[in-house]
Length: 352
Image 1 (cartoon, rainbow, N blue to C red):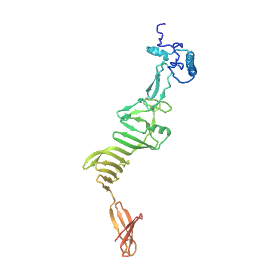
Image 2 (tube, rainbow, N blue to C red):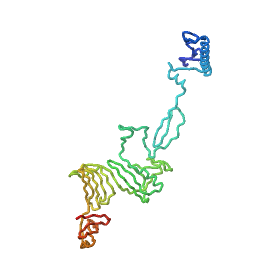
Image 3 (cartoon, rainbow, N blue to C red):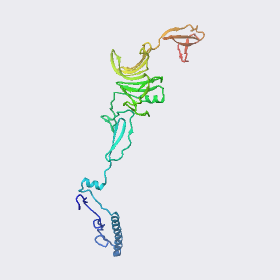
Image 4 (cartoon, rainbow, N blue to C red):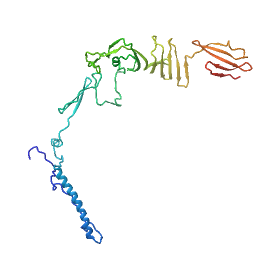
């Protein structure tokens, strides 16, 4: 045997190395199979013939298998890793992915052809990982300094879409609901956090921060914050407390004409500041009561149409803001008012 040849721990190349099945008991033995049959010799001979056929079949099958297989059965006992590799065949090739400037490309350790590179990111300099975990689970405490969802600006320009652009903008302790409006007459290059963006090529499908001949152009939008949810300080019992506050409305140039909804230590507050700076609204107090601020109060009551009680009459009230409510009056036989009906048809009965 030459140096380096494999040494097998067991080799079965003949029937002698692979023993046939042998029966350990025989029907011809009185000790093995006692019987009380009258023609005992005949019974035993028949049973022995049956067992002989079974044994011949099994042994013949094994011999045929060994002859047809024509190889060797081996185990790995005592073999080196190199010897095992030679028996198992060549090792597979490992492909390793890489990402640079938004492009996924591959290398392998077997000298084989690699898949074609694939553009997988719209913006360059993106870090991609196979798995991202945190102390609270999968990507549960991912942290960024800001987030906005108006990523379609560039594609809207390419499509000539000048409809309002509604999106979210999240930063610090605030979530803003923004609506951007454009006339389509003004454009500018897309710049985010001081970085100008360019198309990678003339197809204008992927972006990069690397300077190219194709700057990313977008419409100039006028942005309106139509709602915001933020932590803000509110006045409570002469001191300011910080609570989550929902602000609704863009407001006017003087900072009025918007609504606030929040909960302070005493209860729920719903407030609206009108164009004059007056605050009206509702407070649902923890004591179980509801207070309304800004209700209209009566300024004048007009009984000139009341009549003398012999026929139906009317009266009216004028509230703050010159809002007039009119009522009809019905009288009983004694000339007493018994029913008031307002302009909406709501009736109020009067009992004497």
